[in-house]
Image (cartoon, rainbow, N blue to C red; front, side, top):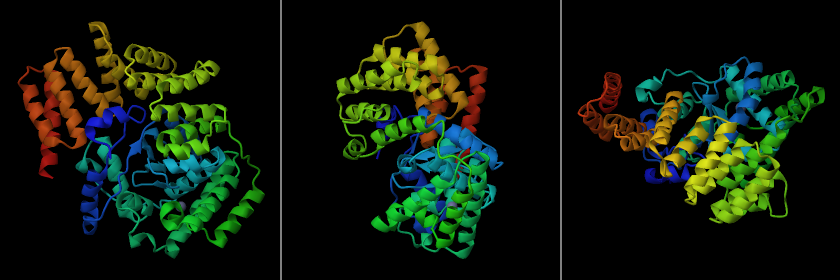
Length: 459
Ligand SMILES: [Zn+2]
């Protein structure tokens, strides 16, 4: 389990939304399933990676369009969980397990899984519970988890239940006829969407077969996707027929990008020995080099990590994610000015909140003058306007402090603490902020946040 104080360090790559959820999930579980309050809960966290998310956006957007579902890239969440699973929650959050990204062979297969999930959304299989997410918290970080709980509460999100409660619950085992019907309907929709995209349903068929096989080999628990998507002979026949009738292709223009993402996720999240087996040293393709660089870095061999990454940079000097990763390696080995330089390069190639955050953090740690401090504050403010981001608020608090803007610093700290659910600490900081002559604009913000915290504390 990641402790808050360490969050900043480990969250360098997966920084923005890396959340330790045990406590909140328990809280949510108590609200919705008070009977489970004492059940053990596995540590789960969402991961954020700009490269992965931008690829998923390219894959999911057309599928959602084919399904006539409004697309919101903020609603794609990647859960750090090795099992094969993907599910949709109340509020149409699409949650994809990292294991699904690692274990799907290509974009065609991934698209098949996602099209099936889109079929559930379009079919209205998710019972829309009026959960008043904002009552639980107006902050998106907490809402995301609430969304998971909502899915569980709706009965459709059996996978979400698995996330929250471990896998022992007998609730999962009852797969009724009604759900089978929903599965069938999602399959049919998926085949239609894939046809619209010119994609073959072959990947979906393969994925279903793969999960079934793995499930037979290793027992139910590892593969919740199969538990929620049992493969009947009827479904197999349906897939076989669909593949036969399809004129779609099994290749995608994003297959190469997906290889890189798979390598990155595997190398960062799997046990290193397992990741090395997937990407042995003999392999010298780009995805293997990517994995090697990250694995060296995880083994604290920063020189090898950098040397390997340089090979990739020599091939693709315009790849922002290579520069971003280099920035991360350098930052964490204490080579701060070089890290700033790498992040600056990355930012020039891709101005995303995540890369901007990496830059701001490195620039704040590295020696800098007043002008750069101003840039750091601007950059962080822009990020916090775009999205709720605990790390950005924390860095902003430090930057304001250094800049002598006490009231702003205290407000930023309060936002940070609110995001973590530390309402008492946040309230104290706001009271302090009021005593440090805030501007009229800041005064309003302080009042709003106080209001919000007051309501939270009453709940
Ligand atoms: Zn399904």
